[in-house]
Image (cartoon, rainbow, N blue to C red; front, side):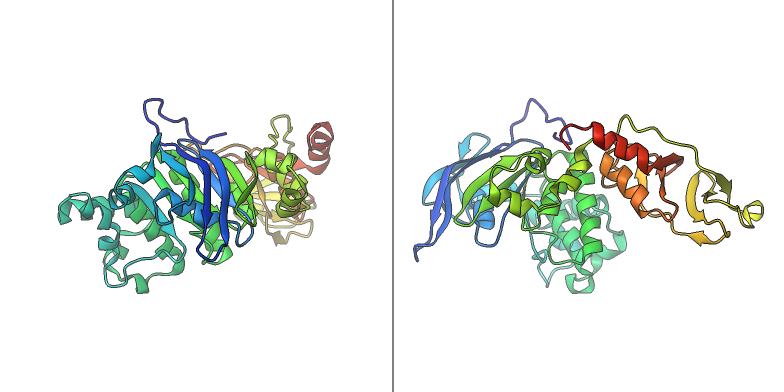
Length: 374
């Protein structure tokens, strides 16, 4: 399901119509690729090395010219227009950010607005707004790219792609060069931005977990540039088209699919709680949730020692309508909470982190038994 309802008055659709690419040495990069990246959605291309993911992406902005078939943007063959003009209307984010090392951050982001005809002052003003939107402090605007961390550079790359206000974004493994923690943060940021902006995004990755997390629909390509399956993540996990897709998705696809199964019938239980402070001292005699105001802070063990909460079960999305964490409101989120808790019972919070109750493993397992498609 799309995270944002598209504007019915606009069309920003990418269509691959039998697109093939054969290189001069005879290598087949794409073999009659046909699929549609729909307006306002994140469409992810995923597959092993050599399957044509990046080649597919680059046919959209004509950095690669197909040898057969055609690519259409909003119903128009991209081969009919001027490549430079086409590229100015498409945001492009690549691995390692691809920033101009001799330009400060603000001017890197202002590049496309200047090419679109804005004055340097206007372009820098727009760049400052976009930098704030992607979560970068204004003090970073005057730094050189080499002075930024890898994660900050990737945020600048996303900001530069957004600065031209293009309705279509091409993202070629944009988060693969950063560490796992930063990668998750950048994925969260992309989902937040998408919920707000509703761009049409074509995203390339080799990581099936990233594809499932980000994609409204996922295209699995096999070596030789052939489409193996194109489906929403839930369908991909529940019903792989063949052995290749099943192997690529992984043996734990049943567990990962729980992230798409709502836990609407899950009953929250009452947990012993106490408020942090002088009255919270001393051994409680049983596992107790220590609260800091209305938010869980730690578990108190039977001996009074503090323990990490483990994963929290987020019962719903955040205040902006987006998922507050992976598995918000799903059986996977509930199961994670019970399995990671030192008390054997999970702690549930709402989308703003306020305590809502407890999650019992037996209740989660009972719902699993009732889910016919698990």
